[in-house]
Image (cartoon, rainbow over the protein chains, first blue to last red):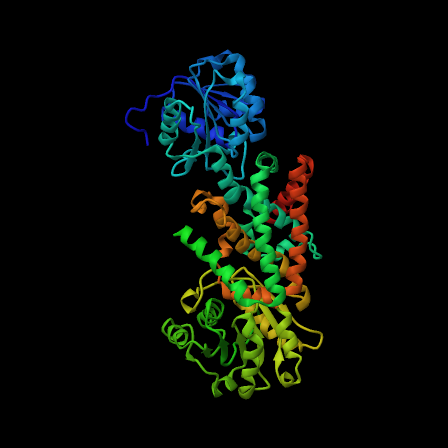
Length: 290
Length: 290
């Protein structure tokens, strides 16, 4: 929803034309939220494809002087690449511009931005809770952010105008914008996102190492849904795990405690203990689903 | 598909009128696969509901003389209750009748059936790979078994006619029937079904024990699908876990090894090791999905 007082951006730049960057550009253009959209992607095929699909007005594999015309720059590159790509922006940086990102882990880029070389960069971190298993500009779809949440992680020193402009943009794309500390974001998403992805990959590994070849063919719809996220991009998820190791492994330890509790209860035949844990889990999930 | 030579059953009895027993009765009746269907369920409300919904021609909370008229008896009660309910059939047992079941674990009932008191019972174990989170006769739906697999677990001494009659029935209900040893069944399903359910329940437990209340509200579609099976019946799954403890815990140990490998790789920053495991898991799943 475009809010009262929303002013379209003058040129807006998107660095990284994958599912997220591409879908963002597509909707900014479709909704007329910027005068012009400039796309960058180190993969020339992605640039060509993004132009062909009309996601952007101009595209280049290398950052260039056009970047200086952008009023807002969105980094939609893999989490691992964020600090380096942010540094590569500096030779073309306009101190009036706003920088934001879409990374699934918020603290590493924020820590990198504390380096004095970024003192001229007006930055607020962002994370739209949207995605899918497909990737590249071809995966871009309209309304990807409609009805989704987008989390912004302003610091105490972040200018109010910076947060407001980025918030207005995501709101115009249909997202519900929430603000929280980067460290809180990373703790919450270690639990609700990074842990489930780790477990989904690990469970498929453990299942196929069964003594029966082709064991997956015997499964029903349950495993199909359970393991869907194990078809996500390994590169993206390896980098998320490596960029949030401490909080993720904290959560893995809690999970292992639960698994140990269940294992002990199954071994000793403690049906009440198992039932209690299963009921609690089901109740929590059912409440969440409404 | 009703095969050439399929002969409808004279009265057929279903013990347990839940999702599986109810859907079975519904389709047997709809497709005219039996002259009459007698339902039993210890819960009088289930009997009433099953009659009201037209799933069965007669229903009773107590086994009775009518059972003696049944040519085939299907046990669709919880895994934990199977051996006891099988014993309760004996006073009303017709030695010409065939007994089969729908339990998700096959060895415990088979072991119970080795007791000499069952020497007059012509038995073959069965497991239709179908289900859902809902339960009770109201959950019964037509074509639940259409296109699904149904596994039969005949022993070397099982009469060919017994397997053939049960196979013909499931085939007529649209299922693809496979035969394997009960122990192989229990090993395969420990991997593809029991382990994922255990992990789904455990992961929700670990997630809600996060430091942030209401943490589930922040998750996206990934966790929703991943945890869907944690909304299944706790009673049913506690009993499945307790009836297949050794093979399930073998699989949990393999899973824990994978989790330890990933934890070590994340701790040491070994991106290649993580990537290899994630790619293997994704490739296995993508091949399975076709």
